[in-house]
Image 1 (cartoon, helix red, strand yellow):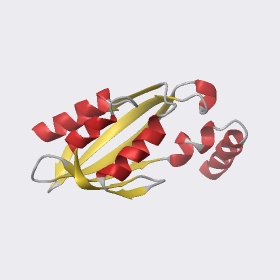
Image 2 (cartoon, one colour; image 1 turned 120 degrees about the vertical axis):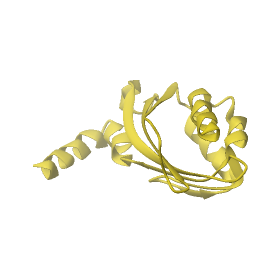
Image 3 (cartoon, one colour; image 1 turned 135 degrees about the vertical axis):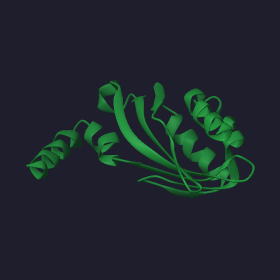
Image 4 (cartoon, one colour; image 1 turned 120 degrees about the horizontal axis):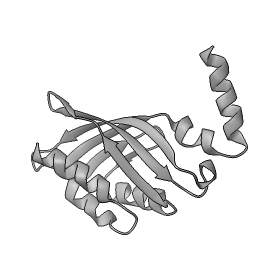
Length: 141
């Protein structure tokens, strides 16, 4: 699927200085959701990414083989992220999955991300992290 290849390769190149690339892979009326946000429209998505990428020092994605089911495409990934305020600036590896729907023009019109928000955010904060990890360990036993 050519549109999917373009989408994945764009994410590999995406950074705070080239967010205009989002226009090439998302429809103007895109619906986007992740564990922390629910957005509608390319402008809202671009603003969200601008905020996310502001202090990111490094970000990359390792994508698994995508799976198509009807008109949906599912892609597992591992995001490697380095941000000065998370994990004391050390790299974080976050697994997740994206559910994508492509419009007739080859751009994504619905994008849903699923990942552990606690692993990305709460566990990486200096004071809250040890507490969250302790609670998770307690529930795992």
